[in-house]
Image (cartoon, rainbow, N blue to C red; front, side, top):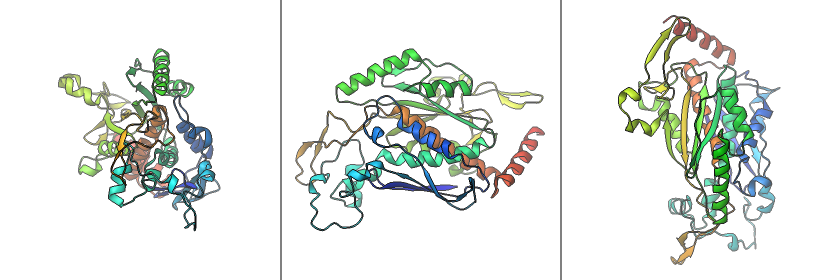
Length: 387
């Protein structure tokens, strides 16, 4: 499978096309829109989330509620477009002076300057409109479609926030369904109420100072069979593909799988997962420090992925920059922004990781229809059982 997205943050719509998705998969449209709604929630979000009420429209590849095997086309309309129809119009507008909306002061931490230099654009709006995290709306929509393929085989996806700024949650193990329930009820998608209160205070303080906060989010995928991905080539290693997907999310600067960077501090005996065998259960690991991936392949244990989101680059206490016209120092221009988007980033993480796992699942079990995939899947499980 592959997907492409198109569209600008203040354009008329965002568009996505999914190619290679199997036929006869039942699509739950409400579930797709539920994922989009999750992306818009979270304490610390800005006014844009009050303007947009994201819903996905399927305009190709689905008939009578089921996929046909043809490319799936989706769109999400931007409600804010009505305020930007002149600035962002596709057609030339004669006699329209929009120089006051031109962006000539690049914002530190954004793609503005790099993109302007690369694409030779003197109006940096042509860069920031596409590089905006608004693009993740469509990546959540495509991930939500992929999750429905996984769900058809009993694979569950969940996520949680584990740090905002200098406040970290107290971790505790719990069943997946309980984790989903608790985090959905939390404005910060955390399971630790004490940490939640301190995080809210930290966000309020940052907002008062005109500053922003980042954090760490985690995705867990349970029910994945052993053997997705491969060790035979570098670009077939599933952990590598997941890491690339995570770091492609706007504002993400780090990725770890399992215990991740903590492994550097420990001896090997505290890092590697011992292999066990039980009649009826088969092979399994006594622990899951590897995060469900060894040698570029799934182990059958839950996949555990974390991503580090930096503080949002747009500050109301603006940083210094340089005017691309005069080359003089100026205060960076401010676009509408959030104080903290870490809870939303967790939802994005879930969906981009789910896409990579679904893609690897389809590569492993092949088939153009879900019925063919299921036959291959069940045959493989029998092979693993009898190994």
